[in-house]
Image (cartoon, rainbow, N blue to C red; front, side):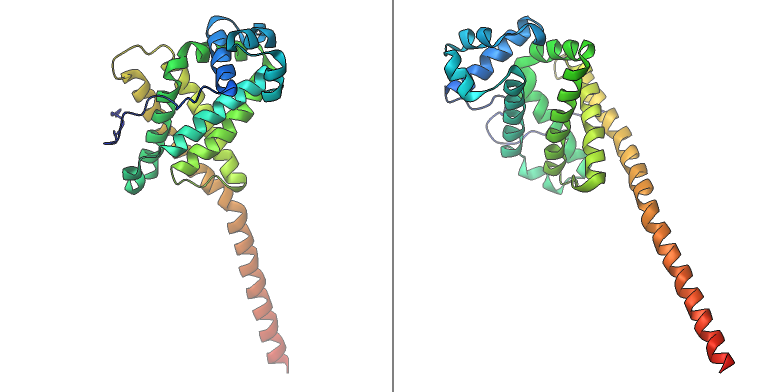
Length: 236
């Protein structure tokens, strides 16, 4: 069942801190343009003009529009990680992950149209989709870690990839969810995490098969060695 995100007693957490640096102006200008046009139609000159910086200043900060997008995603990651609700640490991991991902959606809320535009571009641009997936997997490794879920090693990579796909599906609901309290998004995220939890449990079982097989082989070898030693002792 969907439920409201647990709120901290701290000051409302809805926006990222801005310092007015050239880097932030560039990211903000890019997101504004992305809300108005497709990713592939945004030129670096457009971004520089929108940010009020020169091309030289833009080049000092970023090498491409994809790099600007990556910086925005990293900024969201950093804000989520800096704002983890300490009260959630005693909650089940699924509840912690729910809280972390809802926090991420809060931060993305001012840029909903930009997210919608980017999703449309990714659907018709496979290289962009692959690049976005790589960024999403990296971000979700941090989100898993924030929820006290192991994200290291091959299994952690699988978890992060699964969570990246899960969150992308939730975003499809979120971009069209105009209800007060985001009821549809909450339900979508809750249901997706329930399914993901079952999938993760299955993957844990699958990934433990080689280890269990090795343990079984070792037990068979030990029994065979013991039987052999016993036969030799009897012969003597």
